[in-house]
Length: 133
Image (cartoon, rainbow, N blue to C red; front, side, top):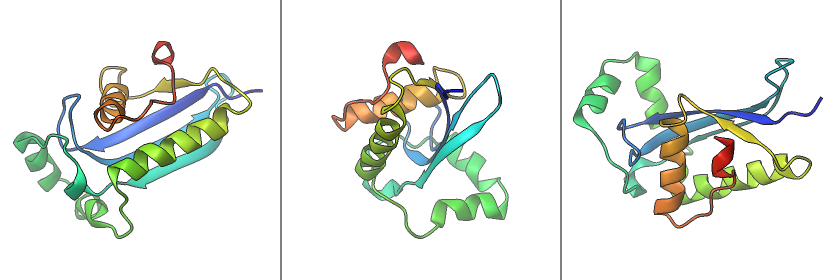
């Protein structure tokens, strides 16, 4: 059975559409069968982003476990532009056989919105059609 869905989760430094993105995780899946396919995960360097950082969110991160906070400091972080490019390549790979991928996030107005706004801000074409949020 074809996988038409991608579940996406962002870790961010704000709770608005302009939030700086700390990391992105996504997985191709079939919501009917529960089958899981290809995965995507990147940690993004905050120093080159122009996204917003909110004090409340920063304090929230400070209150998280040591392992959660350390995830922000892992080596091998990529630039926000490289995240956009690699996410687009991943989605294009998935859509080679299926051009109707639906994007699921923690509410279409949070993860999806932040991701779309980030692409827009950096003048990158978002690889999933807006009607598939």
